[in-house]
Amino acid sequence: MANQLDTQLCAALARAAEHRLGNFNVQNLANTAWAFATASQSAAQLFAALVRAAEWRLGNFNTQELANIAWASATAGQSDAQLFAVLARVAEWRQGNFNAQALANIAWAFAIACQSHTLLFTALARAAERRVGEFNAQYLSNTAWAFAAVGQPDAQLFAAFARAVEWCVGDFDI
Image (cartoon, rainbow, N blue to C red; front, top):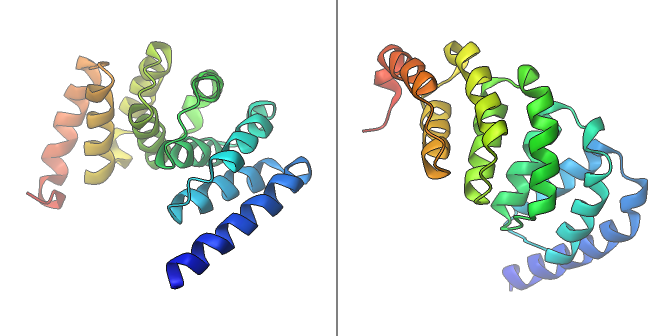
């Protein structure tokens, strides 16, 4: 009964959100996508509308919002190629502003969505190298996996990660 109510509630929320997306700011768009993905509610029609609304405003997204919309889209199985192409361009431009978590989440999202953008992954690699000291075990493993999964191994980044693993080897669950 609870699952049925959750599904009905999420469907009603999705319909209501769809009708109001024009009034959403970029944080509202990213948070809505994040909330539905976190609740394991793919809401395909809502995500399609969110993607259309977000694509026009991605230049206004901060790095956290970019990472959230990418993560949410990938998590919900909504790997819209056009959205990820625009996300890639904006993320390339802003990669210097990403913290370790955002770098890991962006790389992971693109890998999950099977979106291999060479220029983006090159930019992410250089940014990750500069911030390697901020990466915890989870960010290191997720980012390394993402680069490998999309066929973008970066020897320079992986060497930096290897050195970082030595510092935090006790944090890995082996």
